Amino acid sequence: MGEKNIHGILESLKEIKGVHGAVLIEKFAGILGEALPGWIDSDAISAMVNLILKVGQRATKELEQGSFISATLENTNGKLLFSEVAGNIICVIATTEAKLGIIKLKLDAAKKALTG
Image (cartoon, rainbow, N blue to C red; front, top):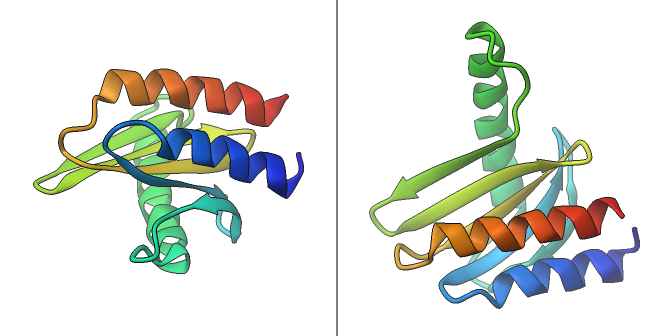
């Protein structure tokens, strides 16, 4: 998938009410595409997502729960959604008012578009 297509797919997630942005990150590596506001550092997000992913994968393995699919972190000022797609991770950064159901529906569509 081309960089332009990735950016377009991530931009479509950013258009959801309450979503600040989205980023596609290679597992344990760099950024494949982003649609983030200027106040979010994509390199910092990549490092944090990879750290969270490692912990999630370890917990999944230790508890014999299969393989990682997705995770949601709800915080006092927002929500972070992580979802595996073709060996990579999409991270969506949203406000507390963002509707998780809508984001998850659009995220599923984005995953299908990214995997072709």
